[in-house]
Length: 220
Image (cartoon, rainbow, N blue to C red):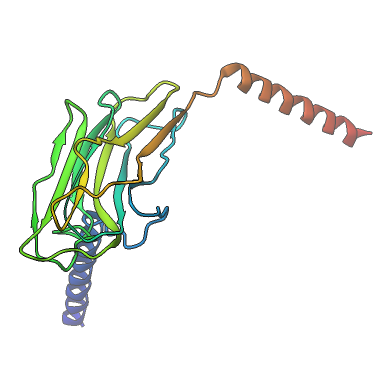
């Protein structure tokens, strides 16, 4: 009986370890095969397109991700993306391809990965990828990279943005020429202001008045 319990405990422990490992891999590899906000070619864009910060509920240390997508009408062999962000309120913590060792867009091709750049002083993250040899990626769409950001300071009422650096973001066709983009969309970050105390007081007063009126009606 004791051996059976030990055997069950061992099996359960192995299962738990495998589950933790699988969960870790899922967290570390953000693979998005279908965009939630598709764009017509030729386009670079980030998802989500809007990330709202509510001052009433936001906390220092909150994390969120953005994913970079591309859709092109020509075959390609190389891409590079630089995303700009406000260092007063954000810190970049991680940047990775969307399919592990390579982007989902170039998945299945022989590629030369590069080391992503995280620049928290100047405020940008940069990543890229090159198809090796004579290979090329057929026209189409796919995700390229994702970046994780940490909220370092609660912003005032404002409208922030995480946008592409147009001079450092490109994708080449098979002649090593930039594919011209019709659309380049970053992530808007509207900030919901703190709930004004006067409005909160009016709400409380209105609720109290409604309660008193309803109570009187019940007594009648």
